[in-house]
Image (tube, rainbow, N blue to C red; front, side, top):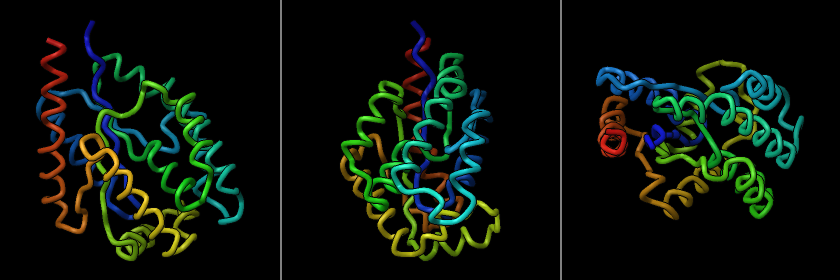
Length: 216
């Protein structure tokens, strides 16, 4: 049986540069003749995009952290079923802007949602479909917030939670990387964009080559 294509996730606080680095990695892989799909969370499927609108816009207190987590996992279930898993089965590498570790950081560590509750949601919704590799882009919270606010995207509900919240998010991502350093790799995103991109590509290529070898 042909191995499923790799599933690679980019994580980090707001303004860490995830979308830029996903685009650069997609270009690099496409130039090598590799099929790539870029997607995002929350979102990535029609129903999930509607949930995204609820989650990332509006007032800070529109949703409690528990409600956010439930909405995130509802969107994730749609995303996996309708976008991620079909693409992987078809031999397309999936690059995703955020996944479960964002829920663990934003709703879990920063929002103080019970980790046992989140683990139960993760087991039921994600199960064996977890990412093969997670690139955690690490940037100082004040730098990330400044970058994010400069975008003026309107999707700023989490940015409105402030620097202390973003600091807890960053600490959570660092802890997640330290707990599983081979699969969840911490990337210094305070460097020049090209340097970060080269670092990421160097880490991704072995996974891609391994998959290609398995697929014959």
